[in-house]
Image 1 (cartoon, rainbow, N blue to C red):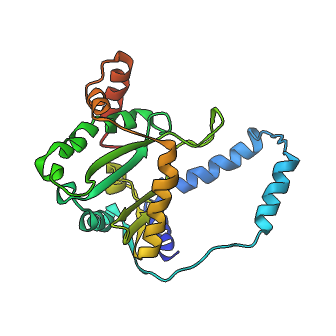
Image 2 (spheres, rainbow, N blue to C red; image 1 turned 180 degrees about the vertical axis):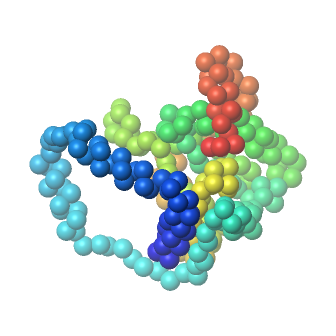
Length: 253
């Protein structure tokens, strides 16, 4: 809450400092005009069964189980050139070359709000998976290397019920977990204000890892080296065109 209030107060002060160029003044004036000239009455139909279900859920007692954990809150504010969350990632990330098993789960083009950006990301799969062919990884005594999975969305029968996966979290060695709003993309690093919590708890981090491995991967697809090769140099003309469009905005998205 303190971080939100700090951000809110900062941006309000920025707008006020612009004087007559304060965009809030124009939004308020525009709303007053639209309320008188363009107000549209909408009719909504409600499903009684859904309303009943929502009411039942609202009245249901919480079964949350709180567990103690060491935790630290981080915030990124690019306007102040803060990179605390990115630093936390770099401090926690392990390497496949040290016999670490890494599972990377991301959206597929069919579940991403911006499918072309997923196509751009797919172009990096071949480089990531190439580490698995290195002698240092091949000599490991336990399963090691990088696995890449693409989220397909949960399905009910033949129909897909879930869209994009918006959760952003990572688990390290089933002991540390980082959970927050930070995306590993240029927008989170250079534009958006983001927040994250790093916690140390074998119980909580282990449960989060089990959730990913036992539930999310069940609705995901493992990417092969052959597929990664095709994604880097797609033969399909339309796919290649859409990927090129995503590359134009890659640094902004």
